Image 1 (tube, rainbow, N blue to C red):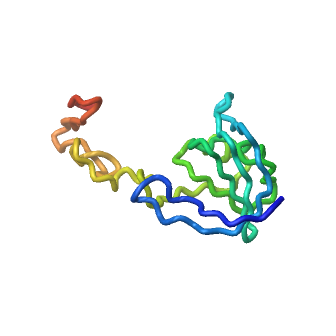
Image 2: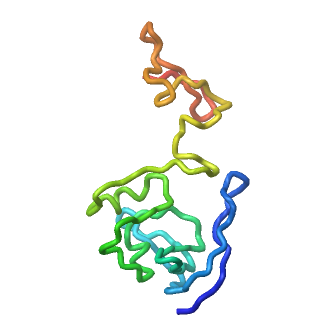
Image 3: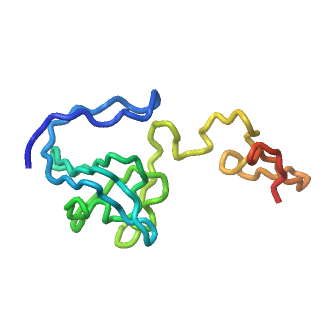
Length: 156
């Protein structure tokens, strides 16, 4: 273990929040780390376990979704007894993290792609879709048309 000052985050573009400057303890390093993914493995590359202010942070060099707990435990992080585990992932983590959890919360944070698709400023499709509109079907029962694969199609 050793201590170091790092700048973490803000790598995805102009909608990302600013970086965090942290003094961290480097607790674990795994070269060619992998994480479980629905019975297979996904590469995470050079990965590190950092600790600052009592918070454990896992950072990997290959951008990927965190799917199963072994992505963290494989770095040496003990998840037993943790009161809160925060996973920066859209929905992929649910299969691996829901079992044994008291609750899952979805947070819509700023970034390149928000979790709330109804907030996206679509320019290639109409805005008549759920959840933006509670009932996207026309009052006469006509299904909505949508742009799919560059072609307009009627939902059925």
